[in-house]
Amino acid sequence: MGTTIDAGASNGYHLERHQETRQKIMEEKRHGGAGRVIVVILILAVLLAAGAFFLFGGRVRVETPSFSTGYRYDRAKDYATLDTFPVEGVTAEKVELHWISGRVEIRAAETISVSENFAGDDAQRLRWRLDGDTLIVQPCASGVRDLPEKTLTVSLPCTAGLKIDTISADCVLTGVQTAQLDVDSVSGALRGDAAVTEMLSVDTVSGGASLDLTAAPKKVTGNTVSGVMELVFDEAPGKVKLSSMSGSFALGLPAGAAYQLDWSTVSGDCDASGYQAPEGRGAKKIKLTADTVSGGLTIYTK
Image (cartoon, rainbow, N blue to C red):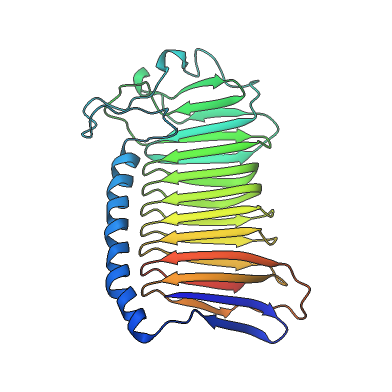
């Protein structure tokens, strides 16, 4: 059922439901809902397969779905270990971090540095290279089959773009500043704080996310199958688009922020009891779109 909620008008909430008869609503739940479930299940299967093999932008290539050929990526000969070529002193506008399991820690700093807490087999040590203005980090040599859990620690100045791909590794952000932040994870958790000014994208299968956004991104997208995602904004964002199967979302909005919500769900609930609408009509409205099968949405004033 589709619902439009306009929050922030002088009379509080104005709720306008799309004109649907009870019969049509039941038909949508019975047929449309079932169709959505099938589609999302298929998407989940694809995500699990793709995520398990760490696909990103065509850079990672796995030849069989059994992972029998190991973790592979293109241009493997162009990568170096930290011993061969230290990252310190390198400048890059964009950063791509690929990690499988363990932990990824990213901190704000004046210069770029990369390290890992591993000194074992050389093939299992991280690799990196520069591709134009982009620094790319891979967790190991291409073709490695068995990889232990490791911690990747990265220090970064303000960047134009930060891309993070993980399988089960947790990711922690501390004071990160970037124009664009794009995070993809299968089951890893994402938490911390970041100043994202242009675009924020978080995609997970079952992994959760809890982010404090200290700037106002113009565009925010959040997609999850069954994860729990909470985004707390210090400043009102532009557009926010959320989608899930059974996963739930929570949005913390700054005081004085108004929003217009396009809410579509089969059986999920929307709770805005913790939201305080601004007085008057002058507040610019955040455009929120949320689509779930059974997942819920909570909106509150931080």
